[in-house]
Image 1 (cartoon, one colour):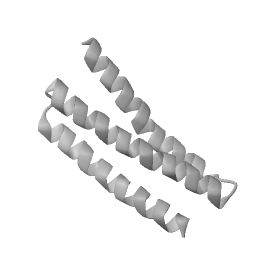
Image 2: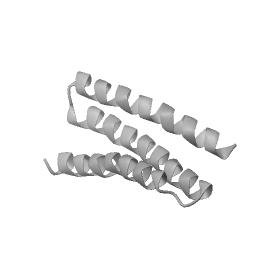
Image 3: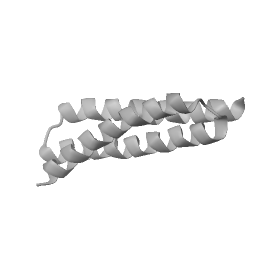
Image 4: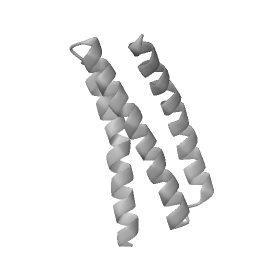
Length: 89
């Protein structure tokens, strides 16, 4: 039970950090600031995927749940990757 709590807490932290950094990026004071916040959101997306995979593999979660969440996260990763790449130009 404790193991499950630790993983859930990490997943919640990284998952909510994605949105928080995107919100901050929308209020960026410069292009550099925008890129920094979006890059952090992208990194947090990869971390969130890590926690989802770890939970799937160690907690025997139903594959359907993690598949749906990871598919949604993949779309977020694609969008953030495109934003970061285009902002670097």
